[in-house]
Image 1 (cartoon, rainbow, N blue to C red):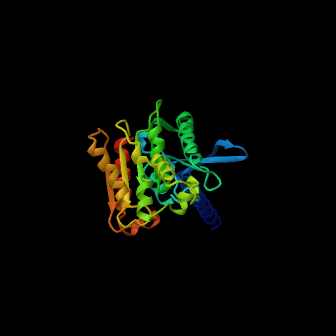
Image 2: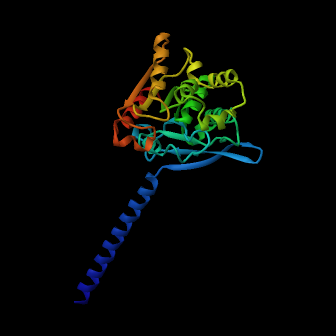
Image 3: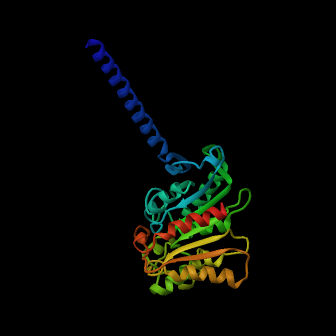
Length: 296
């Protein structure tokens, strides 16, 4: 009887150890599968530190286990005066990691404390930092795209327009991007509060001076044949940034017969806020990943 009990105890211990080991392995796998984030100071202006997050995907396809990953620089929205690298852009961040992309989400200086073009200078410096350093995080400096939402779309567009060698940006994505300040000015009958804060517009300034500054800061006026391929995703019922702005970008490129692929993916009935888009059309996420896969 004692031999039987000893054998039973031994079996129980072995089984308990096996279960414990399995749980440990599963736990380790779950931790490993989480996206890995490195927060880096990419720039300092006076006492202000500007940070970015380098986020590697949850898992790599087996074929790319030792290969460098495609990279997407992410520029948040918020009307140039709010938001940060973790907000005003959240829905797309998870999509990128699930799709196997390394992303770099950046902070930039906000208005009205910092006027134009401080935020653009920061975005361009973040692009330069990414090109120089992303390889050490597992990213491919020759496969970098940039994505911006709303106000961040304007900054992403201009960063791509000003981009130069080496490691030219290979893709440009605008999510409800602001691309034409004059259209916005005309539709509203004047400068919005966000624009007034950004551009330091006041009522006593000559109108022609204000319009000239808005013209110069509008991406649609600086498009050129060397642009990277463009994907625009926009809700048709956007009341903050007119859907027509994205159509005008496409029409200008096609009208000039430039060899710049430009596609507009419209989300029927969707408003400006990206967090609400899934209620209207979740397919935009698949479109984004498929399109990026063809470019990066």
